[in-house]
Length: 194
Image 1 (cartoon, rainbow, N blue to C red):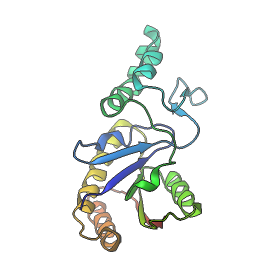
Image 2 (cartoon, rainbow, N blue to C red; image 1 turned 60 degrees about the vertical axis):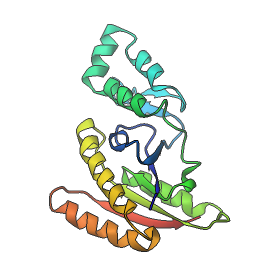
Image 3 (cartoon, rainbow, N blue to C red; image 1 turned 135 degrees about the vertical axis):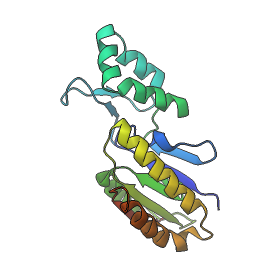
Image 4 (cartoon, helix red, strand yellow; image 1 turned 30 degrees about the vertical axis):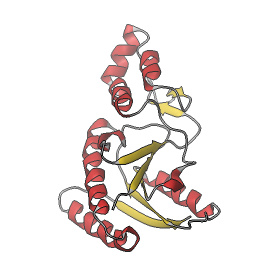
């Protein structure tokens, strides 16, 4: 079964980029009103409008040798490079998320926001299931790589389902039990209908 996946992020994150594959249809969306990247302090994030190309973000972050050294050291420039390798910019918030079969959030509060958003929307003519899954992930390159592989593995498992709506709850539960044996991961799953 060919399924469509979406990842949902908080503004911008390295979390979703790690599991893109050309044979899977994947889109990622931000939440909030803009892209926020770590700055020189927690109180000084680097902020960009949705739709700003990653290459432009990179140039802005590397505008001076001092900035370039700082943002190389904290991994933000590498994040921009990875992002630009799979798409031009961070997509706008989750307005088109209903066109996907599966939505993966990498933070529990984002998962909650997506579920709330989907449950308050007017039903579509198709009235079909959307599987919202949370793979809670720390926002750093190491965890992104690990959880990216976990997300990819889960997507491949779900891709094999003959009837995704019927099989997904059990497949997700089995997947979590298997993952817990070698990595502590909290997997949440909610079916929403639109």
